[in-house]
Length: 434
Image 1 (cartoon, helix red, strand yellow):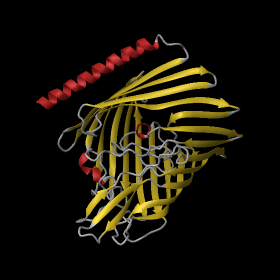
Image 2: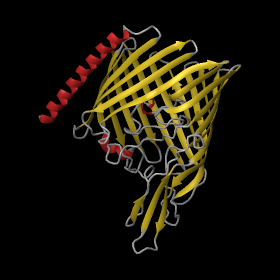
Image 3: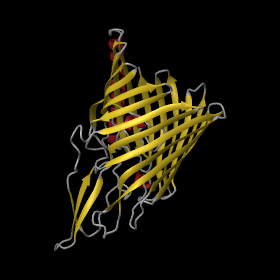
Image 4: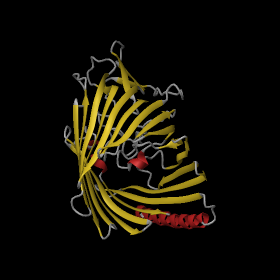
């Protein structure tokens, strides 16, 4: 009863705060000059565990955005985010956080368009998983359950786009040494699968050394290039990225000569080259799209004790092939095939040399697009695990939407999805944007 009362009071307080924020925004917006635009998106989310009905989170998220037009050639965008969780169960050591999400200037010079500052740079458009969309690191505080727009970590970068007839050349310089943010060790979505977490031999003492992280702004910067073009109905890109992989390599050193065997684990970020391409074309009601990426010098964990550093170095080929169909009015169906292939195989490789994941998305609109039903399924063929995400969303008013949904994991704990089989949940939320 006490927990339920506390929960209800928290919800009431969050809604009351939301009303005050909306009212304050309306008053502020009416007094601003015409060249300054202020918007505010506020979202309240509640998640409850399906197994025991425990509340996973009661999260209030507020995102103010300011756009300032200094002139026709200079615009500033600033996007902030404040997030607080009354339950403190998703990430117990990070209950509340205020951050500057994006802060960038847009300008042009001699037909070259520049975006300068903290920004998101989106290369890929696949659902659920990523192939080319690797320029920005990702926050895994809720695994992959957050929308990509919310989970991407914006980076300080110089982004230049240069047009050549029907082709655009994009050049990137990213001096920001920010990498994936994993859930804390005592969090709800801490990685435990051997596919992503370092494997330590049982019965051997282990010492984890501090993470070796690049810290030279220019010499350790990432560089990227993308050519975009439209030819004979095809949207085409060619991509290149020279970057530090956002996942650290867990090198190990096994000392079996000591009186007590010892394993030293030394995580380190390593450079890699990514060369890729994307394509898409619409054929009546069917859209064909795809992304391919070849990464040079990636590292993979092995469970072979004779391999002293515990990893192998290999190139990797990855692709996604997608089919989107809209042959029935207000109905959208999408199927995707993801595959990754480790070029150099070796006994003891923890992951399979060829990994295959299938996705299926169904979306149906009703009542002039005010009611939306959606189900997303991700299934990994290698580990026979996956994720099912049904959702119902109602556009109550132009600026207010409410929704409910489920996040259901299944499979063995060794799998990427199955490791979270005990976190299945019911979700409900309301979003207000003004």
